[in-house]
Amino acid sequence: MSTPVPPPPPPTAPAVRLDGVSKWFGDVVAVSEVSFVVYPGVTALLGPNGAGKSTTLRMLAGLTRPSQGAISVLGADPRVDRSTRGRIGLVSQQEELFAEQRAIEFVRLAAILNRLDDPDQAARAALARVAMDPDDTRPIATYSKGMRQRVKVAQAIVHDPDLVLMDEPLTGLDPRQRLDMITLIRDLGTRSCVIVSSHVLDEVERLGSNVLVIAQGRLAAQGDFHQIRELMDDRPHRIRVRSDQPRRLAGALLEADGARGVSIADDGSVLVDTDDVDAFRRIVARAAQGCDASLDEVRPLDDDLESVFKYLVGR
Image (tube, rainbow, N blue to C red; front, side, top):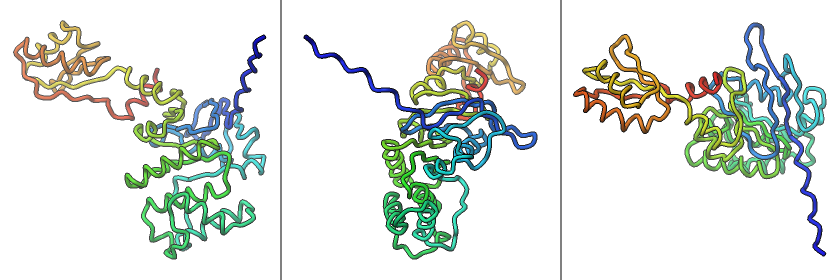
């Protein structure tokens, strides 16, 4: 008689849940009807500057109340449940450090506020985790931006929180420091929930994380990095082509089936919409040669990350 197969373990409870959350400041809507669920591990909140990332993180930390909707963090409302706030660590984007303090003093204060039994030892351990010297006697004001960033991370993790919120933590770090920080974030994600905001796609890829794309205050897409990358790569692209024979070249491109749409701009350049940039680059040279037209410029107009987010929002 075969041994019965045990049932699969129950799914891990979500660490964070947002249901229809909006936040506005007067007439300015910072976050609009955002809903998502985040589980333990590393999740990236990806979006351009001003997209609503920082406001979202502040709501998750219990620092500001949503104007509409419900937030659950570690099973409770962080604005109401004080014990829940004690299980959260926040790396703010703002440089609100006590400039005249030493790093050990700043991190020790965070340990004291979290009522740790041995604040000094906890502060030393946290600074060591971010590769900072706890015996450095210099004030924080003399540190580089990258060093100040690491001190902020140390105070956020000094109490081993269950949820770590990191607002652009890689800003100001040199390549080696950035690699070390990514390693630290991955390590934190093995035993807690980490939400990292970033506006840099390459950073998110190196984190190997689940991704939430936010733009103009709205959730534009979510999934693992490869799913988000496919969405971005599948979008239509616009390319400007300059030639001595723009109209002749535009006709040749349409005949070659190399473009979704072609138009002539006011400055005489050819604007091409295509779904496959690589294929278009192969076609445009043959089309120009076939109609005896020069190719003076072939330049994508929407390869910047901002245009990607606009496209995802408008889907």
